Length: 316
Image (cartoon, rainbow, N blue to C red):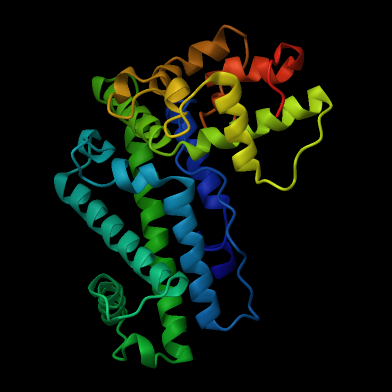
């Protein structure tokens, strides 16, 4: 059923995350997938576009390191290359499917969400990708001439390909779990943690979200009213610059570390020591997801400052 498809429903993704945590409690694949729901009353064109937006959110917003690092052969050794009992032919098929699907999603999403004049070469390429995929679906018409039946066929094919990628990931997880305790298992987990660390290092807005929560905590504990004439982003940044003397252009380095030296970064060191952090407190380890306590622990000095406003020497 389309309403339970990964294109419109988060339960299969939640199941993947649960299995990822069976590999290692620190790990996850996709964070906070909240797809727009499928409706039988929607026409197939609208449902297709909704699925594209949902899948873009899944692969680019919820867990971009999955297709950029773990399932794609790149300069960094991907998870696929070190999985046991997976033939090279199978690995190549998974990489091929993942690359093709994410390219199709990206191109269709660009067509929908941006001013894609075909007068520009890079925009035209998005339409070329879309039209090539239509041929793959068995549709003879070009994008501009699609019928309702075509859109329905496209939705079915998109769901089929997205479901296959989910099955590929599930297969990889099972293969990894089967070799627990081996050198390959250890290397795979390290590769995965490096991928998450690299994602956090290159996306400081994830840390800024946590900092914004701390800024609001600071205001609440200080009994200070927020200035609603400025955005929370700007207010948080001003607060960090004023109180922690960081450079506005690379403010995050103090807490995350150096983007060019992932293995020695603060964020990677905390990820690798995350399970020990919880064991010392006799608590169950939670995955290092963006809205978990991970960034609050990473920026503990800011957390302590927000909890104790009397220490403040500058009030925003």
